[in-house]
Image (cartoon, rainbow, N blue to C red; front, side):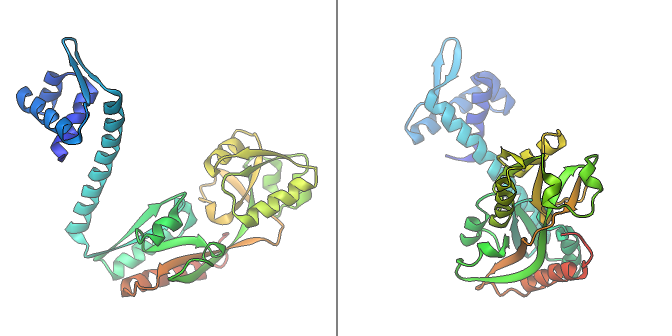
Length: 295
């Protein structure tokens, strides 16, 4: 199976007409039909049912084409990244993080690093889930993580980056937004959004508040859903400061508790590239210099 056959198959699934699909891809219909037949012979099952009324996908064909479409998009992105890489860079460093805002100073670090090492590309990889597994498979070079996640991971170096505290997130017009520090009592009678993959330290605070019996709670599947509910006035939430995008859309007020999050970068012990060490040093300095920056 080659990329041409993949494109032919996807186009035929879209048009369900051999003649129109062939025209759209600028090939003759006999050539187009022949390639589809070769593909079906290779994979060993029928993708399209032919009839006098036209073409329809078989159940197996429908599933197969869905996978092909995803694979084709992945291949397209891989080719584009390869073109970017080959045109300018001699090396690449990939960094995995769950959301863009987790490393607020990442864009600035990338700018500073490029000035000193223009032939090495820094590529963020956003993985809300499975980032640790991807890192362990050597699919990424740097992993942003909480220190508690790193204790049982072998073969890594852990670089302390910053300490992040817990904040209350509210609508900017909420009365609580005017406070400088939120106490547990301030939340009594309110609805707290919980869940969504909260780290253990945050779960401990949530459970402590719920245990008072003075706070209602609502389960939310993820952080984006939680923020949508907060914007809709359905509740408030607690979150680590490193999730703050500093856009001003919401009020982020420090919450009075002892829990916090030790944010670190992980690298593979076997990776001794000077460029990697240089980039991590730049990131660490940016966070060290941002003493007054809310994290």
